[in-house]
Image 1: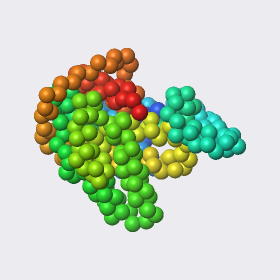
Image 2 (image 1 turned 120 degrees about the vertical axis):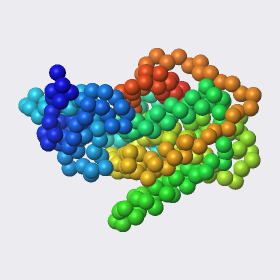
Image 3 (image 1 turned 90 degrees about the horizontal axis):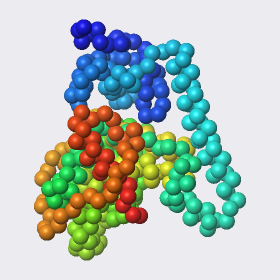
Image 4 (image 1 turned 30 degrees about the horizontal axis):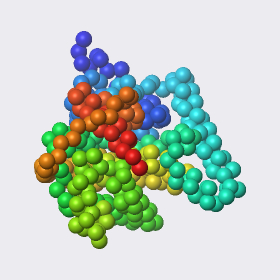
Length: 325
C-alpha cells in the first residue's frame, strides 16, 4: 500500500475537525504523510476552519478529522449545547450572587478554591508545539543543568508586550484599544503571579536577590520570555478563577490565542530570545520531588514524538500547578 492510499481524505474535502473540545467545519487545503514542523509521521492535513482567519490554519493529525455526516453533525451540536449549558449555568450563578454581601462576594470573585473552578466554564488557550518544546528546554536548563536565566532579561516582559501591542495596532487600526487593555492585563498578571506561581524552587534565591537589587522595578521589567511563557500555561486556570464576563472572556481568549499563534511576532520574539544561553546557578541543585499522578490537560499537550519530552513537560506542568499561591 502506497502512502497516498493511506489518506482517508483528499485536498479540497469539506470536513469536521476537533479544535480543543469543540468540533468545527473546515476544509482540507493540503496533506502530507509527515507533520511539516514536528516531524510526526502519519497522515496529516492542513486545515482551514470555516469563517476563521487564515492565521488559524494548522496541520492536524488524521484522528482529529471527521467526515461530515448526520452522526458527526449531531455530535457537534451536542458538544455545543453542552458548552452553552455550562456557560448559562455560570452566568446564572453570578446573577444569583449579586444579592450577597459585597465583602463576601469580593472574596469569592478572587477565590481559587477548587470547587469554584469546577463550576466555571473551561478556558482553553492553545500553546503551539514549538513553544511547548521551549518550555521543556527551559525546565531542563534549570532543574537538570542548574542554569539560571540571566537577569535583568532583555527583552523584558514589558518590552515583549509593548512590541506585540505596537504590532497589533499597526495590523488593525480599529481595535478600539483592545490590544492596549490585553497588554495591560498580561503585565498585571505577570507582576502578581511571578513570585508565587512562576518560579521553580531553585530560582527563589535569585528572585530575592533581584528584588532586593532592583526595588523600584516591576517583575515585568526584570524577567523575560521564559517566565512569560510559563504564565500562559496557567492563564486558563487564572481566568477561570475570576468572574470575568463571558463576552470579555471571549475577547481576551481570542487575543491571547492570536498572540500565541505560530506566525505572530510575539512567538518569533520568544523563540529567538530563548535561544540565548542561561547562566549557571551557584551552589544550587534542585530535583523535583512532587509525584506526578496524572497527565496534563489534553488541550495543552498534543502528541509529541519524543516520549522523554512528553514526560518532562508533564512533570514541569504539575510542578507549576503545585507551587503555593
